[in-house]
Image (cartoon, rainbow, N blue to C red; front, side):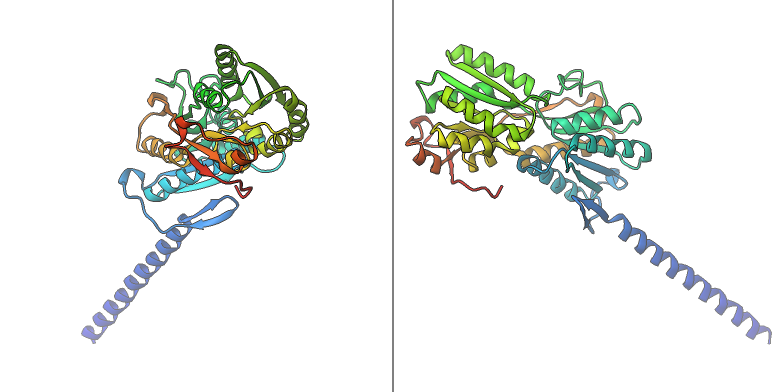
Length: 357
């Protein structure tokens, strides 16, 4: 009887241990599944990858993009590809609706209050300013920005070499002199150039100043018009076209996203428009030096991963991305009865008009 009683006790203990192990396993699987679900532009994305670096195993990032626009989307694609490779958890938020700036600010405020993130990656100047101004006063979460034109002028860093603020990132250093040289090469006799820019975006200020100085050096008269709303672009372009021999576009998001309004009026007036990204060239701009925005996104994500590992954003120098590829719209060359200058024939990439950007 004593032997039988001992056997029964051991059997009960063994069954208890098995239940505990089984329960822990199920709880672990459930937790793992929940942690691998992340929001991605309004839908749920599942990833089964795990962090390759022990320092990243508990890392979590928020990616906040200003608006749904091709060049910014390319930045975010580069960022998420790099984050996927690292295996960390992340959320992606893209501004939509009538007031994306306040939307980005609200997301930042919620993150600051609720916590849970090791870094915030922002895409575009407007999103970066909105997020940083709201996150810096309420939280110590570092911000790493992507595709910002003038981080010092925007108040994101005190110096590009030593940010001091808890913020760093990549700069889209669009070369105005290179753009003007391209315009002057396509149109050697040009004397009147127009530019339509967003009057509400801070990132316009620095490049507009450089454009004025560059035109002055080349003896080109610059016609400037600031737009406050996309609905104004078509009418402003219609008035500008008879006064100039070409129009150029800067890097501001509002004009870039709606550049086809300007292009359509320029086509009627038979003058070229010069763009700053591939989407604009595909929409009918004659040519443009264009960034590899996905490459910029990957570099930004790489900086963010270093911050998660413990590197100080305040001590991390800003990285300038300035290498661009020259794209030329072959359909516009034909319509405007122009040719690619000899200087560019060996390396210019030709594209055709397409509005699916």
